[in-house]
Length: 173
Image (cartoon, rainbow, N blue to C red):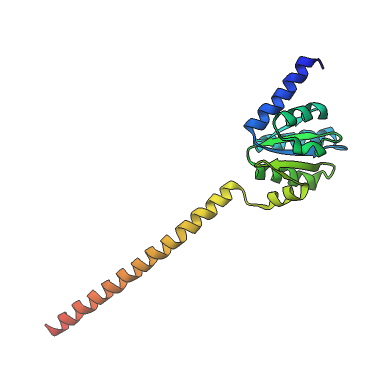
């Protein structure tokens, strides 16, 4: 690879880091080609980019992007998982590890903070963004439903009282 191609690779990694702020580093040693293809397919379906780059070029890009804290993860074959949704990517990686234990998460970067492989597993257990929004909507709707139910009960009591008053006046007349 000549110098200009290496510069393009480094620039590509830097561009991904600015566009997709969350990053996981994986070790795919011992992973068969068929399994690697399946991993890429699953990640692509989740809107995640998976790239394999030489560690020296990756180190240059990380240093230039002020993300040098991941240097310890750049040992051996390294796959980069770039994403804008760290929970979705963590879920895909964790689910894939159940099928293919050869894939290992080395380290990561979520919102600028370094994460470990255990942190990635914890992130995978969190509900997705859509589930959290649904829970929020349910939490906001619940008190409103209670209020509507209370008003409805008051209305039925008032109608019952008016009906009793009408019946009493009809008997008196």
